[in-house]
Every structure is written in structure tokens, then in C-alpha cells.
Length: 80
Image (cartoon, rainbow, N blue to C red):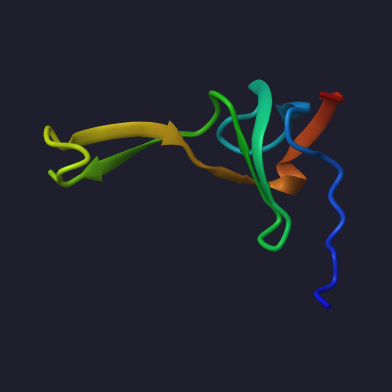
């Protein structure tokens, strides 16, 4: 059985970024990756991903989405 990794934030919690390039920004936790010690916060660390044309996405182009942040760089503001 895999060992469970405990984190101080969970999905839908409101958090604030306390260090790094995005310091001071806040948002809701969309996803938690305990094995990597990372979280994805809504509206913080927007990255651009270049998508190739495909049947699912015939136009291709550049997609903006949130990138992961290390869990030690966020502080819990309120439980979701």
C-alpha cells in the first residue's frame, strides 16, 4: 500500500502565494499533486502551451492555462 502524503491545502481551498514571482496573488486550488508537492491555483502562473492541429482542436494555436506551484509557496487563507 502506498504511503499517503499529507498536505496543508486541499482542492477548493482559498490560498495566497507567499514567495516567488507570483507573490501576493491569491486564488482557489484547482488540483493538488501530493507526490510532487505541487498545487495548481486558479488564475496564478498562467503558462502558454503551443497546441498542434488535430481532430479535437482543428485550429491549433496557443492555449493559456495554469501551471503548478510548489506547495511550500502557498498559504491557506480559508477552507473551501
